[in-house]
Length: 177
Image (tube, rainbow, N blue to C red):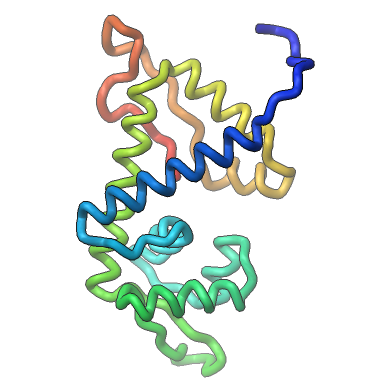
């Protein structure tokens, strides 16, 4: 279709429902793995904290939230046993966040569930549909958010069709949550 739609379309409503469904699927799958306390802010925070610790301020900046909001998020992760907060050795005002062994396991579970959901979504749609959805979602972002998405999130890769039904083959998705 080459023309732009003139009919009112409630894109935001559909986007909100899709996000709500995604979060519910995340929570359900993590509960099946023994994590009954998933919160929607966990996915981004746990992926950022994997491998290396960071300060509360750095976490807030990476998530695009205030230091106060990052502290609240971190306190929740600490209460659940997923992180420990240490005073910085060089700057006593700075608090560094590190995953505990339980937090490392939780982060792995979060990443595994995200990869599974991304893969399943890519299997349900054709490559062109995935590329179009990516373009529409990026168009919906403001300039600052679009710049972050362009910097941090890869676009779907184009691949040759791997089966007669035109669906993507196994392991061909490169998008993240």
